[in-house]
Structures are given as structure tokens and as C-alpha cells.
Length: 131
Image (cartoon, rainbow, N blue to C red):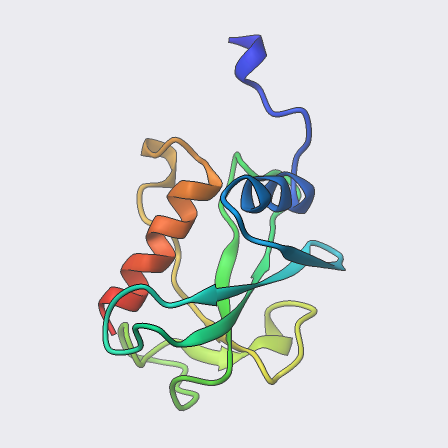
């Protein structure tokens, strides 16, 4: 319905969703944002990291790319599979500095999800669970 349509798109929409879920994001401009994240599951459970995202201008129609993670968790490795493959310098994929690393992890099934920040964070949680 019309009342369910977002009133804002892009990084601003994603930032609003983070705030609703209790996170404080930092808008770095040009769709780049960061937020502190305590890993909830997996071998890095309890670790505080900074997550960076390049929010698309049309979120929630499309998910953010990434994620970008600081500090570096894996060695840079362009090829390969999750968890240690597809790791790149962040500056090649966003306006984030290279103290972040870009994990090339497209969100599978975005169009079948609710297309929410909560859905995207569940995907992030899964990435940490499968390290």
C-alpha cells in the first residue's frame, strides 16, 4: 500500500533503519556509512568491528554492496569463496578508506525478502556465523 512506501531512499533510509534497531550510524557522504557492530556469532563472537556500507541511492529497492569491515579480518584475495575469498581494498569499491576491507558478498534473494535493514543485518549475521 502507499502507506508502506518509504518516505526516503538511499543511505538516509538505511541510517533510519539502523537507528530503529539501536545502532548509531555515521554518514560519510556519497552513500557511504559506517556503524559499530559487535559480532554475535561464530569464531569472532564478541568482537567489536566497524561495518561500512555503500548504500545504493535506491535502497530499499536494492541492497547495499559489501559489506566493508574494519579491522581487516582476512588477507586480500580477489578470487575464491566465502569466507576468505572475494576480499578487496575498500577504496576500490566505495569512498571508504583502505583500513576497511570489502567483502564481495551480494545479498541472495533480496527481492524475496522484506527489503529491510533488519533483513540486511540478518545477512551480515550469517556472514559472521559462517567464518
